Length: 331
Image (cartoon, rainbow, N blue to C red; front, top):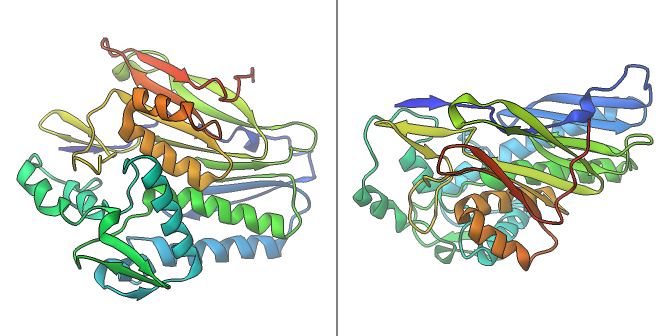
């Protein structure tokens, strides 16, 4: 078994490559949530803003990191009837709403399945249906509820995993922070999840999707570059994290309905929405749904736009996008 991380497709924050003569442009960057973050804003350097950003991200990790045994989410996963703060309640309700709209394609209760599949860990043997059935009983929004500010789990073995929406939600929180401080022109990114507000002085902010143009094992990348203003964008795809067992590739996208990690020709979905948490969640849901079902869903949801990258029967890369996805521009 091999664990690999590939960069065939990812969001590229093109706005970081600016001239040092643009003195009105300021950047804040660092590491958080197991990835990187970048903030670029029009305005002078503000040390208090930098401290506020660091504080927000540290507090967010203390709430949502499944790798921190002292985090709020870890406590929820160990115990029952845990008191929740407003942010966790808000994210729980948002997750439930997306789950209901996508018929369960997005589901934060898949924690037991994620642990079973062990993405990021070594596993030499194939997962069996019996193993999946044994933990699938602990998966589903119908087995968890809110009572006031307490989360009630039907089974103690239930565990939540917000990873498919957390980066997007944190990006929204940073956006709110900048807006509360009076900033109107900025772009925020956490690990490829992006929110753009206003303009970069005179020009629009630009974001790029790296698109492979040849067969999967011999990829040459091009860029689909587009402008983003007062919108959010997020990408989900199996190019970043997959598990290979006995020569078979399994993506990190788990179908909550079946319990299986999807073996799919869909490599990547990029979603544009009004809020990054929504873009993040729907990108994951569309990976589970597949291109055909996702496109049918999108016909009734014009508030969302999507860009799909997949392989055909010959292994060649193909793309398809909704009509309302931002147009490509030349760099």
